[in-house]
Image (cartoon, rainbow, N blue to C red; front, side, top):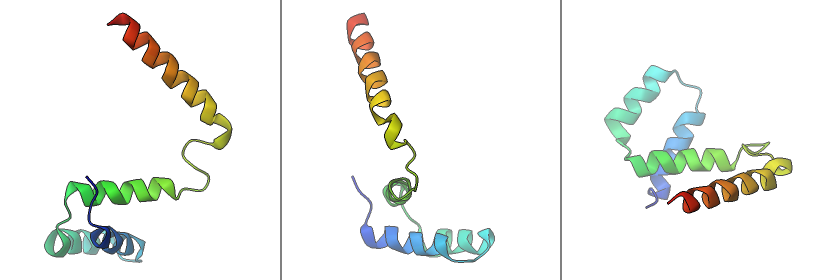
Length: 78
């Protein structure tokens, strides 16, 4: 389930502002009260926009191979 896009964008703008953490915390807890879906939606947006990406393009296929190898090992052990 995804968080509400408008709530995600409000939270994103809040984190991009040049305010101290105490002020941000009070705005988040008193006014926004975001649910876990909004927070995780913002985290996913942040991770997608990282430059360079969290998993570098050069290592992508290596990660896929490891995942497939682990998946095969787990399925054989069951």
